Image 1 (cartoon, helix red, strand yellow):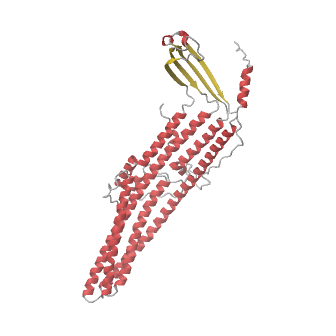
Image 2 (tube, rainbow, N blue to C red):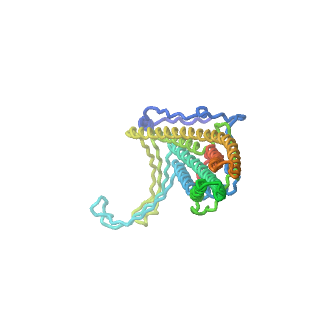
Image 3 (cartoon, one colour):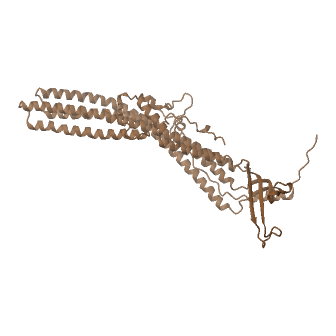
Length: 484
């Protein structure tokens, strides 16, 4: 078996290695980053098979509301919204920066060519016969450059850029979830106002009936002008309530139109109904899977990942930087000499950069990156706490509103029955108008409360769907760089 010759290090190689190691700047004391919150600390249940976990919505959670008109509005908003277009632009920019970072260790090539016609000074360093005469000169060169990533600096920069791109992708998903929720909540708010207007119209009709009855009783001598004046005073108040509601309805329609990237007056005929909107199931337990379904939480996690790689890149700055460059080409005085074999030139330029006197700046830069990581972790912890709070609040409110509606339905039925009895007794002359007006006030209040509770329950379910991530599936880890 043929033995390989033993390589004996030369003195200059050892000196170069010693110089490189001596040129590494000190990174200073170690830094312990902030601790991230865990599901157990947040009180979230395990999502292991068979565990009782959060009931998660579907990706298009608004379809469960059962309103085709709402589905169309949300689809248009997600397609044409300027805010989503801005989020997409931020994602595209982050992807472009990640693609640029991925080229740091690529072999780079260049071709340069230039031609010059010049009169050379007769009193310079160039001797005769060139001095004092006009000559043509030309250069044609091709070069290659490569920067190897010995200490992982460029790899860390690439991972940091990818983390920011993935965070931007999750941010866009969060913006889409938020926009869909805004449209749905505005739609429910408009339905509530329209339902309140129906109550106001019914109230106006009741008061008109009371006025007619009071006029008849006054003409028959059964009531005085006091009762008649009381009945007349109720009509302007009812009409005022209608006018207030009409204003709010107009503004709500304009808000929905703008959310859908339309002209403000486009949706002036929009008339949703609370009764047509369906309620979605309410989960009873929050599971740890919530943390992976909230795009804002995932975005915060990727910001932490990017900041962590930023520290790795800053640490790599403390080590030597190596660059290799080679060129080959032609250079001649006189165009007719450019392509002669004697005009060829070539060279190799290895370069070593040592951070010998730059330690203070590099340590400050590293401390800045460490502070960025702590800030990202703090924001991540804040996003986790907010996510758990919003989801828990939504579940508690939805369950409470179900009980409130059951109790309120009983109160409304009794109030309407009492009002019917009061009107019958008033018609028979067995009671005064004040009793009728008081029972009517209770009926109106209960009807308004019924509308408000129904709207609140729908709104709470929508907020809960947003708090549970809007059915989003985390696909940020599969993000790939575009073709270069």
